[in-house]
Amino acid sequence: MCGAPAATAAPARWHAPAQWLPGALCVHAHESGDFHYGPSRHRSTASWNGYYNGWQFTLSTWQRADRLLGRHDDPQWSAPWVQLWHVWAIWKDDGGSWREWPNTSRACGLR
Image (cartoon, rainbow, N blue to C red; front, side, top):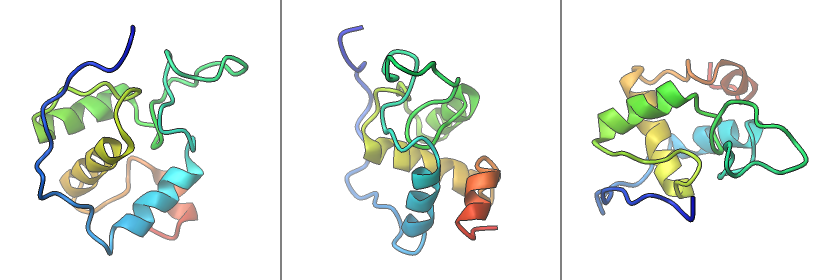
């Protein structure tokens, strides 16, 4: 693969809510720390762990966010802000719950 597949444009007016963003960034910091983590992009010295990008999405959770957002993004090639938008979609769909990231959200005091 030479690069990221094209995706639909995100709405220009979407911004991560200020009160929510620190929690999301804390979860990211406790996850992979690599916004482009995936089977085609992991460091050659480590084996891929089966999760994707900076929030360590499972493929099924990423695809669920894609459906919620009306997108078709590749989790390992998506820009950090697109990943953040996917996190927001899952968090919101889960009723404001961090259930997809139980351990890291607990470490961030979000539970």
